[in-house]
Image (cartoon, rainbow, N blue to C red; front, side, top):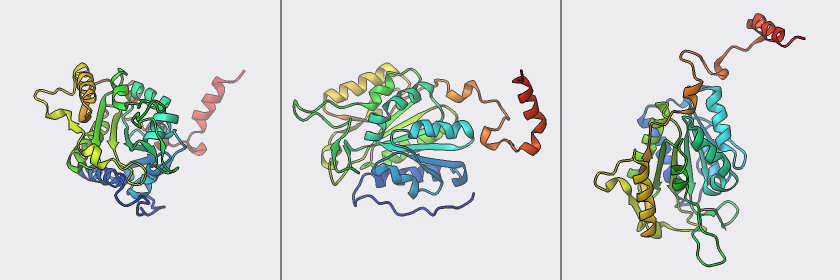
Length: 286
């Protein structure tokens, strides 16, 4: 691994929920013994968009809302990498919402950690797509877990709270294991309070409810997951935990061939491929 950047200290405000998210990712990578040189962390725009600067791995800062197609490109180029995309609720549920839907549908074996604080913190507190409706002049919120449950390709849907480290760590490990096993897209929404513009620690601490504590809860049952999410929401609760996990085929299972390296690891030098390149040109000759 060529070291071109030394991980730096986070720029977040003291008490920001993102510290817990960063620690959970670092802990999960260590728990599954994931090598730094085989890991790529990409981030979008916003306060969450600097997390790749704080983790010992390869990193990339993507365009606003485009972290998922960029992460998919990395996975296609080198399927052997552990690819972790990270972003905020504005980045993922607004300008990036179309990419999220299609990533659920395609189900590539990457991890997406979406930090939800209900505001655009970097631009000083505007309401995000997940902000709760507070009066008739404001809009109702988007629920990313419900969106994922509505798309058949989704294979791993979880939510955690940055104020509950044990659950967050367990969910993050499960997400990385899901992707590492080639089982598809692992989506983790983390309720991560913004202490400066939307300090919800007191509110969320009393609302989060782990669905897996219910007797007989089966995360492979999509209908039961839907029912649990909506029932808890009607009660004013925030459902957390591993909400849904399935064996839907991963995107790369349709094209990845055993023993064949991804394009990033192939020798494409002219000197070693003259005959191959000549054959390609011959096929397109008039």
